[in-house]
Image (cartoon, rainbow, N blue to C red; front, side, top):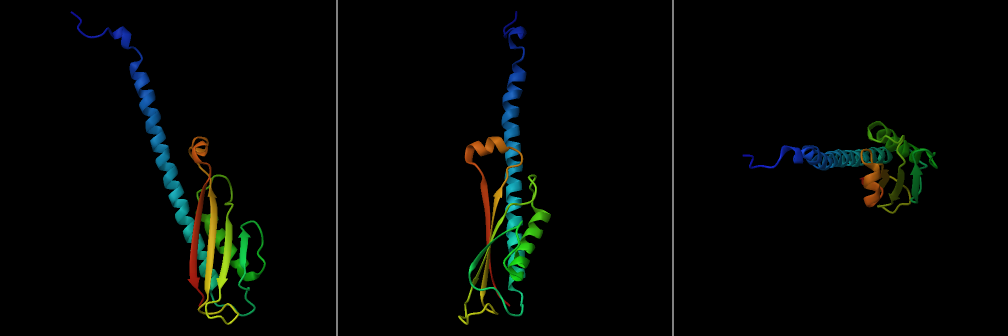
Length: 163
């Protein structure tokens, strides 16, 4: 006596179960990979911003830039040598360590100086703020994630006191 179901009626059920569970498993696996890469890129942007700020606070003889806010791009030259050195430090670090399969990083670098001692020149004791914005490009699941929320903007801000 055959008490169970007929084996002929269950053909292919393992394949359907595998397809459903494998889809969820791969989506979870690639989501973990994508999140890990985004966290790594965020850490890299923080380090690149720190390198730029460290370059900007070093002692340099006059004339130094004024206290305006400068917006720089990696693919363009800065208005003066000091801002160019900051931009170059950020871009060099980012290009070396960022995980981006879409080519060079498209970052916006903002440099702002604050005259803490109110003497009209950027010298020891004044603050330098470097802010870097980077639109993260999804690597593994670009089409799926972009329909859910678009582009992920990574940002890092570092404030250092001039030496």
